[in-house]
Length: 419
Length: 163
Image (cartoon, rainbow over all chains, first blue to last red):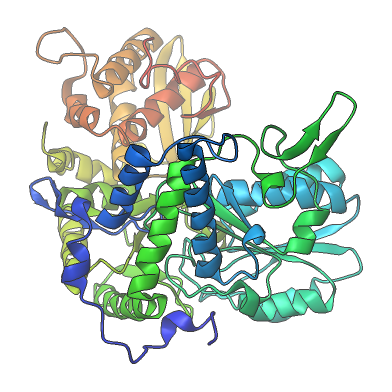
């Protein structure tokens, strides 16, 4: 199946039982300001279901020791669980081999790893890196640092008024000096699902590798790195029901082997003398020091949890939420939705006439509704729409239509306050 | 904890809708730009000093209601006052917003500005209310541009700090 369009095709599988799912998330029972919590800030961080919490606790209470070190029982158990988690993540994104899955602290570290390991080795003066207007700062700033250091140049793919990348322009940006492409799978600020498969194919026609920032895609779409044919794919645990402090970098084995290490230390070496160090094989070459073992194990449980529900089902359900929210919010006079791409993940960015997003956020909180306001670490997107900030509601598969109604009612209340 | 909605009361909403002293002074003797990079709030402040008295003051910019109303009421409060009085108000406003000033127990000169007392319960909004005062301080000290996040800024420390 086509991974890019996975979220948008309602499958024939039975619809998702949202009340049963909500029962798995203890935090959703919270009340805020005397009202039931309506958590619509999932693009910033998602909540953790009981099986993931329990897995963390079980690891820490019965399985923990340092990995890849000692011969004792606990060390062997911890190593086995850590490596089992790697295989779960491998399956989650359909990577060819488990050594192509590197555990990092999150998407940001994954991208920085590629910048240091690949960029600093293979990108030089006068070379060009293609990024898009929709990138999160974490897929801009590392490349800017590299460009400054090496005298390389950033080229940027523009977006149209709906928030879709201008693909024809993208194709024209390639030339003999193009060395790298970085593109987000799903825009965190607008929700646009980018046609990354086509963009990767285009880059490969020019012999250029592509890194996909999958932070906003992994929790919502069926990600298949082989189908996408991407060279690198980065994502975070805490946006997909896992813990913070853990994430993944997928890299094509051949590329990872050609790269220089990112951080030096224990576990990433085979032998060390003061004359010469021999680096370990991948993925260990890129996992210096003791990793967040419990977080990795819990992330494995999160991947299992999502897979058991089914990414197609999750995507289809969230599409339904987004469609309903879009219709309801569009009905409110004086509210404008930013990002109206044909293919969107469940993100609703909006601005209100005469009310600053910061005030919207504070007043929605009074109603127990949690949204994000600000520039969403995507200032180029804000500049494109000539706004300083937006209000953003972002949905997960545990949100309900009733919560969309609560959001809409809260927005109307804000308008009442501001007259 | 006070109800947040109390913060969004008539007087603040009114100043947000119809900000007083809106614009730029052509013959300013002091000016400064204030930024809050975390939320994109930005305001531009100009003032004309005559013998240590604020003879005229104006501001404009793009910001949330709390910030805009704070700026509007600040300009009204300091116009016609001496720089020393204005500096006192800056200190008192800052202390009120960060919860260091007990309005009932300690003497102050804040008057109507006490409508902003509620921000002390909203850590993410304290900076919105303080930004205009921050910018006035910068204008007095000939700091062309100030930011709520600038480490070197003398006004930076008070937010969560001890100065």
